Image (cartoon, rainbow over all chains, first blue to last red; front, side, top):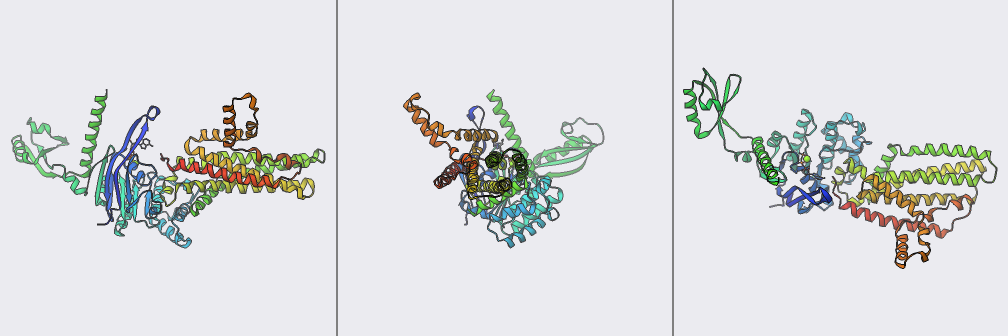
Length: 317
Length: 258
Ligand SMILES: Nc1ncnc2c1ncn2[C@@H]1O[C@H](COP(=O)(O)OP(=O)(O)OP(=O)(O)O)[C@@H](O)[C@H]1O
Ligand SMILES: [Mg+2]
């Protein structure tokens, strides 16, 4: 089996803080993960979870407190390996005295591309990210979304084998998001490996072969979006209307929107619940399976983490 | 090395687009005013006045650019996070640093050369001709350039491990100390304990020595600068810059970007 495209081993980053930097905050704790060649891997987690920390470690912009990582089978300290990597930083910013064409040309020069080749690629890239008309404008006059597009262009300009994108959709309009999705799918079709972080779970669900959920600096689960979701027990939802007043306990538990009530019960209690509601004079409109989404899995993890964090805070006092 | 060149050219382009070279207008106005003023005073000392004033202006303007732009070279890229995309490219951190240094030295060379040309034109105007003895002015300009390269290297080093403001203060402080290194070396031994005198001696060799770069007096009077001094200063700058840049690269290569 070939080496994974991206592989981390116990990757850990601590930041010192407080008086004389004596205390340490762990931003990333023992990250072990693999992204296989040709895979689209989503990195999801709430704000401050450690997604960017992990990505910056891979890009050797910051250095790990412990652990190591390999990309394309080579240690990340290998500079030449970076020829085959594309990276989009979070909230990218570029030399504001250059135009889009100039900044792409500048970056392309580090990849030893010949002048004609550079020109040709830049032309195609600008078209791909929708900046053809703005190519001669200095970047200081660019909007946030336009900078994001420049960032995307420089990440894939040199036809890298592994593309790592830190929140590629952020700051983009709906058209832009759609274009980025298409670009990621195209990269996958071309056999590239893509790893991207995002907050937008529907994007992750739609695009990713696998996702990794990271909360509080720890990887909490890795798998295909569908399999992660199965971890949550499914329930049943009953939608009903009342024909008269009722004080049945189940009615009290239901949530009311307008004239309708919505009640969620466990699968095995479904028939008992229906009996009880019929006795209370309810008219049942529908019964449906509650399919847990990635979002719920995500929310559960985040809430558990918050509760744990709160518990720690309480015990510290 | 080639990658450092790419960075250097971009740094030069940035300086040009940020209108750094506009300082030349100020220099030109100053020299025009001086040449008019010299016409009013007695003949015979034009050389002294014009050359002293010209070289001082070239030095001061160059120093201002070296310190402020030298400190900003790396810290601005870290601050604005323009470095993120760049350092993910196949480029080593020391190559980036060397390129930034080279780019500013290139800018200073162009800027200083333009000012030197202006100075020669003014000399030509007030003296109605240039002689062989005037080459000393060019040597003076060359020494200023060497000095500026050293200052840029120091500014770059400080900016790699401290805030821009502190880096500016350190660079200026070290420059001023560097002007008096000879005095430090010649402190009367009697007033110090042996340990103390050994320490100041060490310090005087460690600190950058800017004294040897000042040939204003010779240039103003049209006296020739010995060739040995030219060679010595050139080598000194090369070695000192190499050491300082190596230290800067060592610090910067371990630095976490925020
Ligand atoms: N330079 C730094 N110094 C100290 N702490 C830091 C530094 N950079 C990040 N952190 C901390 O590390 C943690 C993880 O940050 P990180 O940027 O990786 O989060 P993220 O998952 O990318 O969040 P977001 O979704 O908001 O981008 C945060 O708690 C943050 O405060
Ligand atoms: Mg982030």
